[in-house]
Length: 408
Image: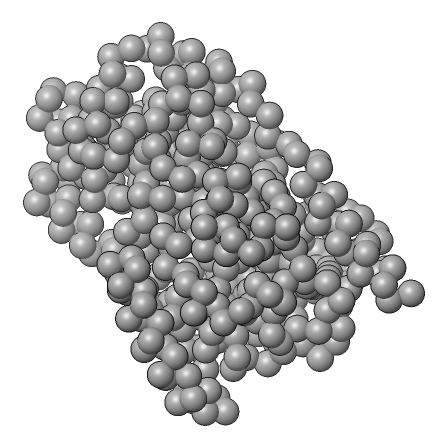
């Protein structure tokens, strides 16, 4: 039996975590694999979705949200413990400061979580057993941990984002990808952006597109989203409240639509650290009656299925699971023309891409609202998309197989 360990940063309600559970479900039905899961910060609602038979190595886990106030306090406590455990924080403080300064220079923003990931990876206890394959399913702490702390015959890492724009740097990574045998990216564009940062890893990079449970999505979409359908055009967006997701642009667009005489109700499903600032912006733009922050929703699919248009205007992406879910549900989609989004949508055929500006997004939405025949065409075409790629799974499992053969 081949032993595979998966490592991820948290199990919060987000795309990568959802895709990991779908992957674990596929593998849990294969008796030749023994599956284990280790979570760097052991909290998140999606622990509930880990299939039976997957061994969770963390001694204690919490199923609470990582984005709530209590979740942020939980992570802060974990960070404080990591800082003082074996003096790791004092040892690494110069490196943390250096990484923050480099982030600021490269991206114009400071993302403390990125700079702290190595602290977590070096301070938490490592598994005492050996594995045939260890898979870091997310960038940052999980990858550092697998590269440096896990004993495995073969090691793999997943990349889900535009690596450079997300705030990662080779200095921060400290050569971790040299110790990884195979790197899986969720899209071709994600691979290109990763190779911009790590051109020497080209021979290691393989494609592994997100796995989705189509039947489960269609089943859950049958539930009721609204007691009574809201008036006007119904717009829906799913994603955490984060700078990457460009909700500041969306709120300004909502205001412009309202001024132009387009009655809309725009529902955002997700939570995050920017909620307070976005609430303030909603009031400033006077769209409290039409732009609704719903928070994290356990089942977003009825909302997506009810949408006249699914809107995904983001600053950058890896490969959006939310877009794929909207495609499975046949929704007309408007997305910003950026890394990730443009690989998922054929502009004018199964969705619309536009520049990420208030003017461009407003014009595109007004055109889609005015042209029901365009929305119908997008609906028909998106239902024809190929969503399954069995060759991706083979690239991952062949690595586990080679590890097992090497052990014989």
